[in-house]
Amino acid sequence: MVNCAKIGRELPGMDAPPFPGELGDRIYENVSQQGWELWKEHQVLIINHYGLVLADPKARQFLMEQLEEFFFGADAQMPEGWTPEGTPGAGGKGGGPSQK
Image 1 (cartoon, helix red, strand yellow):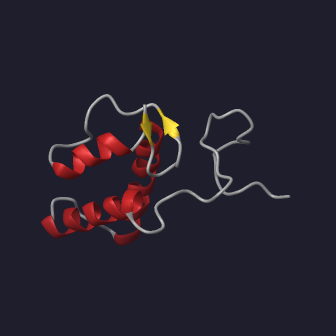
Image 2 (image 1 turned 45 degrees about the vertical axis):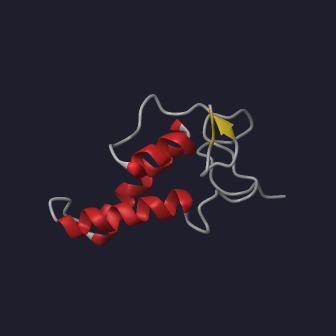
């Protein structure tokens, strides 16, 4: 279990670091499996939006910067009221705060 830096609550962690190195270890220690799944979806959006070619070292560096910002940047935590997909009462894909 980890206190997920992205989702803001204690959730099951990953089985292993997502990649080697200091950032991989930091993610492993501070991001839940569910938080990592959110990144995997988000990175596809980034790759497609910017037309990144991951064979290019500059593109990989940019993606790593975006990854670090996604989990540990100033606005990294999900909006208040957001519930992870699959949580009872989540109402579908997670998303933003519930409308009142």
